[in-house]
Image 1 (spheres, rainbow, N blue to C red):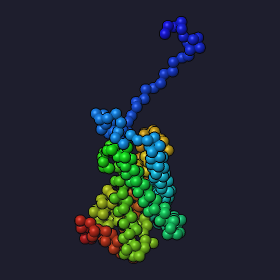
Image 2 (tube, rainbow, N blue to C red; image 1 turned 135 degrees about the vertical axis):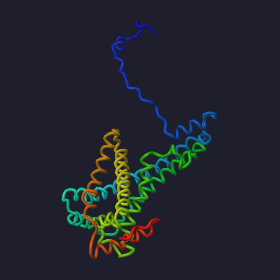
Image 3 (cartoon, helix red, strand yellow; image 1 turned 180 degrees about the vertical axis):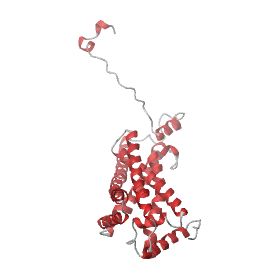
Image 4 (tube, rainbow, N blue to C red; image 1 turned 60 degrees about the horizontal axis):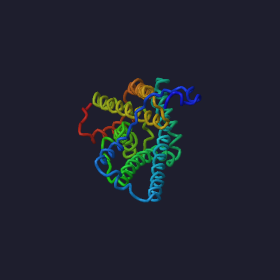
Length: 299
């Protein structure tokens, strides 16, 4: 087309420059592209009536939607507890520099979510269970839909199907379960409850049998807090569509530093408990250490 044939209105329009953005395929799309590149023009299960395909897509979408919502809102419930826990185990110790005052704040906070067994069950183990199971359900659902539509899909443990957030979530489970066992299950089993378990109990663990207890607890809590803060902050950033990785990592690092500062700067320096509590805590930690493949030194 010559310049004389262009209308005056079009001639006055300026060209708008757009930044180039690559078209990225998800790992599962790349798998399908490689699988069917040399085969037929359409996947084996894509042939069928339009009505059947539409019904199947609507049903699968509703199931995936509810699983996604369950995973998301259960994380909000547990994050509310996590914020309260961060306040009582880190911020208050840093502000007061007093273990007795911090322990009182922790016990007071417990009355809020332990007022009824149902509330604590829903807030902590309930929300965690829903979060984990809905994540597993989403992964199985994705694998099922891919197999239904294309006849083949990556394996459940295929590395292309795992994000960093998913990996840190699974890495978080062992230390989380250990934390629950040491601070709730063992006292409940040996003493009938955890009414006497607080920050002093944590401090006692760091000082239990000298350097062995200190190093084991230091490595454990540093890894636990680091993985937990990274997973929570990055997960929330994903939910709220935050894209600035630098700010996200700074937020996760700041949260971890604050939490560990309260732990190592105040709680661990309080030393072991004495008297009646000291003997009780020795019994608790002795039970824990006897279950490990190592033996602490005798004092």
